[in-house]
Image 1 (cartoon, rainbow, N blue to C red):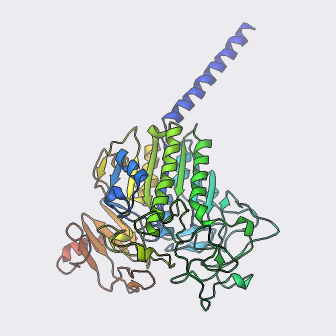
Image 2: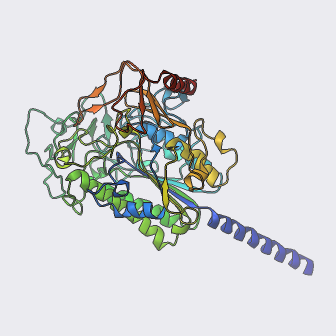
Image 3: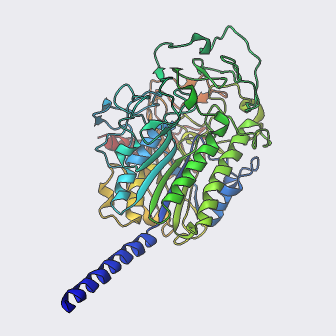
Amino acid sequence: MKGRFTILVSVIICSGLILNSCRTGHAQMPNIVVICVDDLGYGDLSCYGDADVPTPNVDKLANEGLLFTDAYATASICTPSRYSLLTGRYHWRSTTSWSVGKIKDVSIAPGDAGLIIDTSMITVPKVLKKKGYVSGVVGKWHLGLGPAGGPDWNGEVDLSPLDIGFDYSFIMPATADRVPCVFVENRHVVGLNPADPIRVSYEKPIGDTSQIYNPDVTPDVIVTYTPENERRKGEVLMQPSFGHDQTIINGIPRIGYMTGGQSALWKDDEVASTFAGKAIDFIDKNSKKPFFLYFATHDLHVPRVPNKAFAGKSKIGIYGDVIMQMDWTVGQILKRLDELKLTENTIVILTSDNGPVIDDGYNDGAYEGIKAHRPSGKYREGKYSAYEGGTRIPFIIRWPKEIKHGKSGAMFSQVDLLATLSDIVGNRNTDNYGIDSRAFKEVLTGKKDRGRDYVVIQNMNKTLSVIKGGWKYIEPSDKPRLNQYTRPVTDLGNMETPQLFNLSNDPDEEHNVAREYPDKLKEMELILADEKK
């Protein structure tokens, strides 16, 4: 009996030691929050030199962490850059997905696209799961749901973020200017009434034609959309400047046709606070274990609908209002980390999916109100373009336990987040996890100031560029050069001849020196050719 008792005590003690060891191990693992802001420009933040819009919460991140001046998204549009961030793979590489068939050149996904990320692929949440992390995604998704042709909006959503490594998901399926205008939590549309099923089409009108935008009717234009504005059926409260002329939801014409789901429709002025609340809930529920939160805000993307707490509050109109709202959202996350005493060992990364755009489809007053503000800072163009403003983005990382305040000029690409975060949490052979992702732990923690040798980026028309050592090469392209719809008109950077710029003394990319430096041009051409293999 005594022997059995001794064995039992030993087992209990060992179990306790193992449990305590696990808890200690978890306590030592950093939590990770990646905040991906939609359409945020290099020149939109005060910590990057902007004096037009106060961003105290983002500035707090920068003042307590490391601010990068040479960081890049992999594309100047959102779906491809988000794909690369989560998979460690350039989006323009061919891949096979059983949900959408053969993919090449992942572009802007429609609202009813099937899941773009193959479920067999390596992803950030999958590599973190190897170390015991619980992962959640909150916010804009825009990487497709379901099989080819889209999911069953009225039942269980098959093929979702849960199938590529996330444990929890509360998302906007695409963007707020695309239907369906509903939230999906895990595998179901939130608040859906089964008696009012959702139907979605991106090909032809469906349902009640009184909800379809009619350009022959000229309604009163309300530049600043607020919840106090009356929302009569079919009434337009925000006029499109181009496109965005199909289903009217909440007084805003959207891309695509939708009927049904009235009880599930989001309120545009509450999207930011809803996302912030769900992100905080995820942190609260998982504060005792290592967690990864991919928090994708929507604020700067059209339609811009700031909450009344921010509407009309900035000096540069609605564009500045949504920047202030985004900053508030970031502040809510930081505040909760402080309250839970998680700040010291939580990595918080703030970045953008691509460059900025002023008028992207609505007459919302942004173009008129922006004044002298330069969303891309000193760089040329913005969203959609091959020029620097399209892909050079803000990138800030804070980790008080390991990172000292400062600035870094090291070159870094979002495609490297997969391998770098994997390395930080202790996985081995991290450079083999993503085809294009490379581990730069010491760069992100400020221990080294030399990052990538070069980055590869892509514009809206799938033109590739290489940036190395202060030089930039844009490959020849026969695609259209201008996006005539945006205001101001966006130069996409496409030319039938090669372009070479010395960014060190020509950040505005005004002087194509391809003829003057044939050897440098050849070097850059060979780098891109090798990447394409």
